[in-house]
Image 1 (cartoon, rainbow, N blue to C red):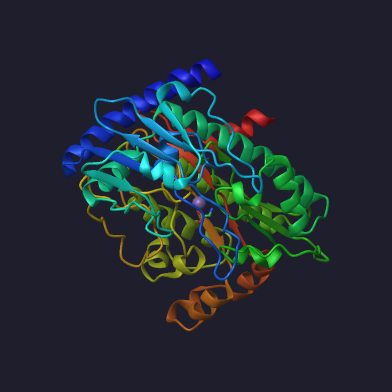
Image 2: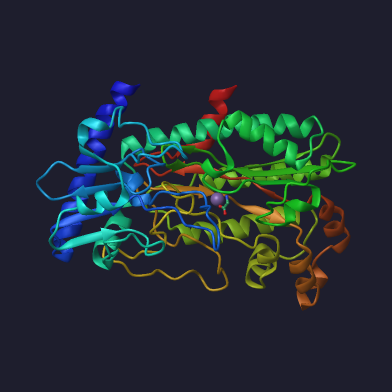
Length: 439
Ligand code: GLY
Ligand code: MN
C-alpha cells in the first residue's frame, strides 16, 4: 500500500504543481507560499484553541500538526517545505519528516516561526494564510485570482486523495458500528460518544467536525452537540452524524436507528433509506446538484404522504414550503480537505457565485456534478417544534395529520448521509462500500 501511495502521491504533487503554475501565472506571482498557520490564542489566557492546519497546506502534505511550517512553490523548482521543529520541552515537538511524501520536497528544518518566515523567498508572492492569527513578518494576501483557481480545481480529487478519503470512511464506519452497539446496550449520548472515539482512535479535536449524537427528540436539533451524561429512561431512536479524519481528509456519515419494537419509526427510516440510495445513485456527471436537491424534496413529500403525515400532492407540498418544514437543510455539500469543502457555488475557475434555488437558503452546492467531485447525500426528515409551530399557522396546516406528527415527535428525526464520488460511470459510494467491507 505505501508503495502505491508513494506513486499516487507523486502524481498528486505533479497535479498540484501544474495547478499552481497556472494560478500563479494568472496573478503574475513568482512564488506560492502556503502557511500551515499558527494556533489561535484564547483571550486573556496562555492557552490555544485546537490547531487546525490551513487546508491549502494539507492539500500538499499529509501533515496536520506542524504549526508555523510553510510550503513554498516556485514554478520550475521542486516544492520546498520549511519545517518548524521548535526547541521546546513544554509541548510535543513534530517528529522529523519521514514517510512516503518526503521525496517530493526539499526540506529545511528550522527552530522558530521567525526563522521559517526569514527562509521564505522574496519577490512577488501569493501568500495563502489566515489573516487571523497573523504571522509576524509576512502578510497574507490570499489573491482572489489564485485562490479561486485553486479552489475550483480542489473540487476534482486526485486518485491519491480518494485513497485517503476511502480510509477516512473506513475509520468512520468502523466507529459508527461501535456507536450503534453502545446505543443498543443502553448507553447515554456521552457513553456512545466515548465508544465512537475509542473505536475511531481519534480525539474530538482530530475529528473533521463535532459529532452529533442524539437520542430521541434530540434528533430534531440539526447540530445537537450536548452529549447527555445520563441515558433516557427509554431510548426510542438514535441519530449519529460523525466522521473521521485521515491525513487531513474528512468523512461525514449519518445513520439513524430505531430501538427494537418501534416499527412505525423503523418503517419511516426504511423509506428514507430507499430515497437516500436513489439520490446517491444519481451522483453522475452532468447531474445538476440543485436539481437533485429539489427532486429530493418531491420524493420526501411522497414519503411523508405514504406515512400519513401529509395529505397533499408532492408538487403542492414542495411549492407551499411544507417539505421545507420537515427537510430544512440542503441535500449535501462538497467534501474533502474540509467537511464542507470549498467551491460549491463557483461558476468557473475565475470565481463567481451560482445562487441557490429560491426558498432553499441552506443548500451548500449549486454546481453541476463532474467526475472527481465528492459530495455528501444527506436527506433528512425531522419533527422540529419551531418549524411545526410555523407550519400550523399556515392554510396548508389542514393537509397535515397533526396526530401523526405528534406520534413521530418523540423520535426527533431521521438523517442518512453518505459520501459519494462522481465518476465518468457509476458513482462510488465511499460510505456504503466502507460499511460493506466491515461485515
Ligand atoms: N455533518 C454535519 C454537516 O454536514 O453539517
Ligand atoms: Mn454533511
